[in-house]
Amino acid sequence: MTTRLRSALILIICLLCVQSSWSASRACHSLYHQTSSLTVLVQDLNLLSTQRGYYSGHLNNGQLVFIKIPRNPESLASEAAWLTRLNGLGLGPRYHGTTMLEGKRALVMDFVPGAITQFPMAAPADIVLTPGMIREMKRQVNILYENQIWPLDLQFIVNQKRQVVITDPELFKLNSSYTKEDYDKILTQILILWKMDDRIID
Image (cartoon, rainbow, N blue to C red; front, side, top):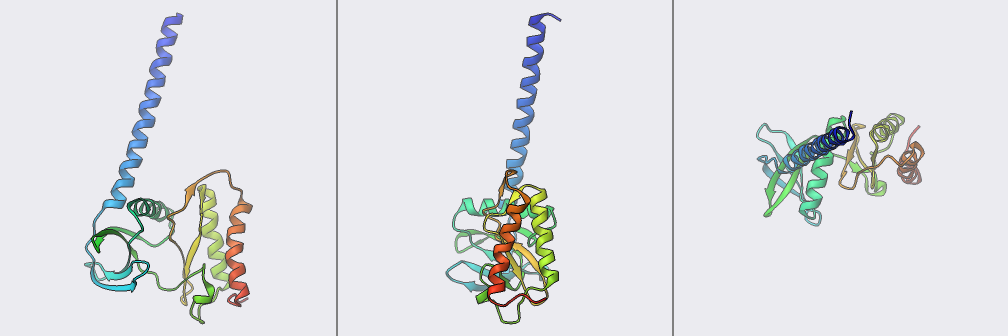
């Protein structure tokens, strides 16, 4: 093979790789856009928080949903994309799409009652963490680790039915540089708060 022919082949291979990479990037961007712009109809709206822009409502099939107005379009797109990704891993509340509310686009997802693990002191007195709930937290965190998803500002919704659901993944990031110990530390910080408030039972 001549030097000129070899160079031509290398150039062709490089162009194909670039095209493939561009196509994959374009496909990801398309999915990212679709998940954040899919519009659903919500009725029977009920204001939950004026400060945070939280509502509940129902889909046409009667399902109760949670509606959240993000701070800005970038936050909406990020959380929509992460909810879609987490749903594919069997995590998080089911994401349905978006709706228009107060002149802004808002996220629509399954309504999961309960308390946020960031604030155990604000949780109803009958919400506690059982060994089974803690095991479920560890299982979900391990899935994040296996998929190299760094859960910045990790939060769960927990309730009296002993449900454990990851919520508010807007700040999650893809990052392979963190170790399993780093993930365990995040969960430990949550459990310490609940232990200090005497909300963990054996």
